[in-house]
Length: 394
Ligand code: FAD
Ligand code: UDP
Image (cartoon, rainbow, N blue to C red; front, top):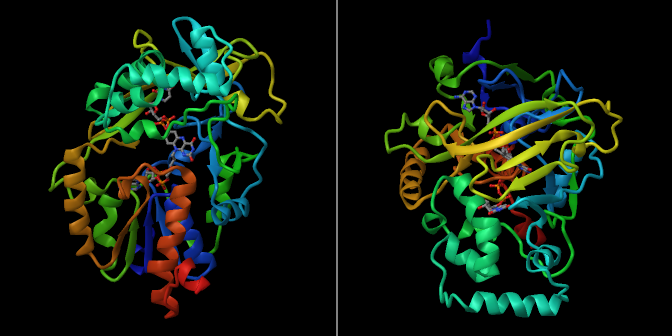
């Protein structure tokens, strides 16, 4: 039986945020730390495993591609894994035809049946944008039309976004669509970051290596809220679960999106020719299909079977796994109220995608954890004040 009361550090959640904090406490400070997770495995949403029927590595919670511009994060994660040469490219199906995504010169030329040069395409799309005369875009639809014009918006964005968010794009914040680049050349890379890849031997191994340490104890299949009464009052808790759950939803429930993934093994070598195919039209219920064999071109998988996940998106209920913060105006107010509550708690640090109610990619979760560790955890132990990189440069 674990003596929870003896721990000075308890990390709730073993995703990239929690695992990074625990690894630093054990390796850098040499102190004991307990990591707990309510799931039966480490790694949070980034977890991957070998599919028993095909031998193909699948990302259990949807495709995860590691990409970053941050040298420090890249160096950190490379201590625990090598990455392959995978570069993410996505295609999208609209009315029975396949186009390149994000929208680039190839998409534009194919959609309009043209052979525009970059300058011609820019001028043409500018004339399409001008038709709608949107002075200052106030929602996702207006923002998208001011970026690509109405026809491209209606073909590739409207149906997909409505399915993904179960919300009319006119009621969604403009900021969501600015994540997606629009290019006037043939660059069809999904991400523009310098560093990109899939861990050569899977995500699960990264977490095993990060957390395999004599100072780290692991407690899986346990819910923090069933055990919190056993934790000592002077223990520091790093909590990476949903922030509204921590406060028993006293200030209201934050809205999240969840996804359902439908797994199918298909008797062929290659189902769709690529790792992710989006479905732009609203008459197809799923948003995309993931085919995992394509993430590891360096592996020699069998050729008889392939495994695919169809992804369906919907609002999360309290019993669902929260995946994406929706961040409507009401959510911003509720989150601020929880932040005010959390500032009153001296011994609890809230972090990660769920604890910060922020859309973090993996590299951002690691970067945020390294900052929290260096700024809020290490100085308390070493007595050495935190210096931000700008302060260090003088
Ligand atoms: P999580 O990984 O969510 O970990 C939180 C952990 O806390 C979970 O394991 C949970 O079980 C545990 N927990 C919660 N409450 C409790 C409790 N009460 N008691 C015990 N344990 C608890 N990022 C990329 O960089 N590239 C991608 O391609 C990418 N694709 C994504 C696709 C999908 C479908 C999703 C959902 C996310 C994707 N991400 C991607 C984002 C990535 O998953 C996150 O950045 C990462 O998981 C954040 O790590 P985290 O530690 O903050 O949270
Ligand atoms: N999007 C779209 N069509 C696509 C891909 C993306 O309309 O084929 C929109 C959609 O609103 C999505 C946003 O662009 O939420 C950001 O895309 P990203 O791939 O970052 O979405 P994620 O799955 O990470 O939310």
